[in-house]
Image (cartoon, rainbow, N blue to C red; front, side, top):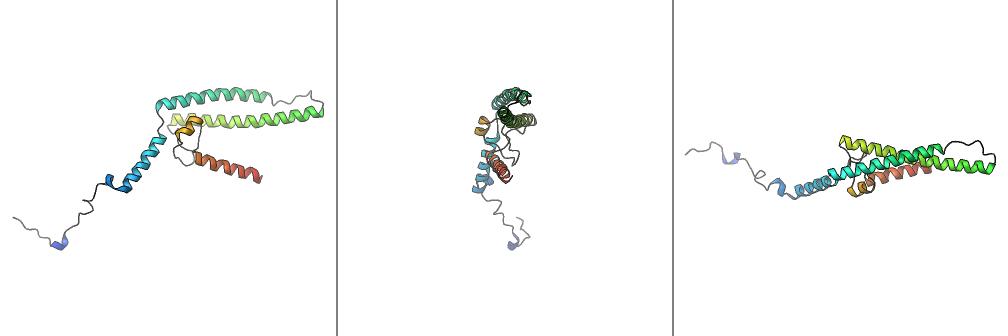
Length: 164
């Protein structure tokens, strides 16, 4: 039998290595649960993706036709000689311009979402890169931001409008 040349004080403590496995530790379990939850939120199945894409393409076609109709109503008519008719015409053109701007921005969001599907980044917030909830995507398939970032952006825009 061979004797160890090391002294008893030179022994290495392997207590850390013999501790409970990483998966059994509470901190790991909490972290793992958060990751699994986050992954479950971001995973959009292929049938859902197809359904969202079809809905966005349909909405895109509708918006393009509405934008063309709105653009034709922005033309200034020269037959309006009565001042009241002119004021009404200006108000109608302003309303059409506002509607046209909103529809154009939604169209741009749809185009960005369709591009994100091709890139493979669909369903991730463009600001924080966190997953957008499936409920939000079902309601607004072209949503680019998670609910928190969307509310923050709208709050900033409202503050900008009030400041102006």
